[in-house]
Image 1 (cartoon, helix red, strand yellow):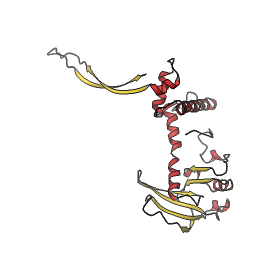
Image 2: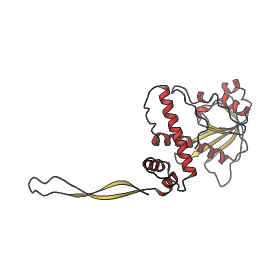
Image 3: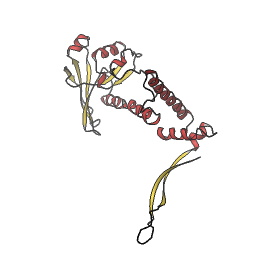
Image 4: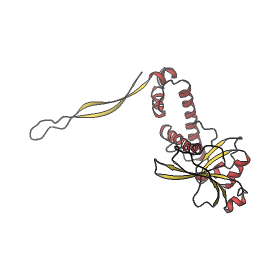
Length: 251
């Protein structure tokens, strides 16, 4: 999850408009959500000889050319694999109405729903197309890591420069931390634990290699006494045991 291209725009700019100037090298695989379903974008990617997998919007006009056979005794989550042509007005205007695309319907068991994908690749196994779209969620995981661990849930300033500065500082920190984690760490830390170890131990005079490999987070429950004020009639206290969860660092 290392970003290659970053485009920061105003909130009112749609995701689709944010990639107007993006062009990719030949044979690049591009995976998009349905916000990027755009026949003009499809034409550009076909001209650049890219491969794309995009989720289809509802009520898209198309005609079915032929239906491919589904695999036997495997990939039961694949419901349909067919070759189509787009017949809508936008497809005709952008001159892709005669281009054949592949339409794949996939059942997502975890969410009990069906999604429909479109791709210009006719050679991949149908399960590969479904798996590629599933990998799209890595970008959502990346955003979650930034928000939870690198303090960009809220912005410290409101100006354009202040917001961009805070985002780029978080991105730079993320790249540096990933560099340390991938080159020095021999322990498979979760990213949140890794951030916590680095943050707590930076004030110590230790090498980063020692910090990421010899420092552990130990979570355990400790029993303590809870003191209640004396009873007004008997004068006795009522002490109760309770569990408190705390974290200690050992190195």
